[in-house]
Length: 122
Image 1 (cartoon, rainbow, N blue to C red):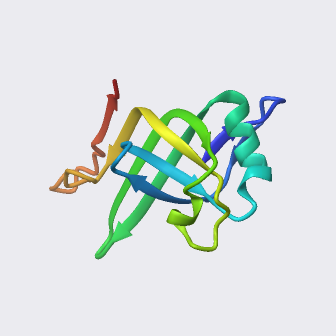
Image 2 (cartoon, rainbow, N blue to C red):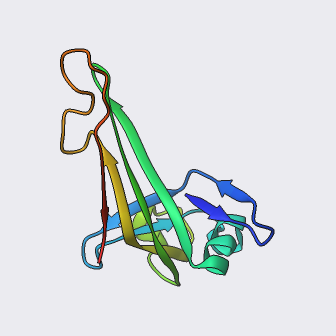
């Protein structure tokens, strides 16, 4: 999750999350979450970026970047992980970028061209 501090400094940290199909959001939580820098910075600006990436064998990289608005929710963090605090952030997407999710990723034939897909969410 990427945020911006009050001084304008960028801050990127790993977080726990789950997709929430009921609200079509990404719910983000953690231990002692409401007092963390990431939580406070996210609420200060009301916008964050969030990335999930992985590699599937034999080496198929894929990722998803979600940019959007964020709000504090006082309950639900334990649905992400039973050990998390109840407070969480709810990310509503405004722009999504993906790579290797619904395509072959790198072009066949050794071209090494990367196919990125971006779309505005309304």
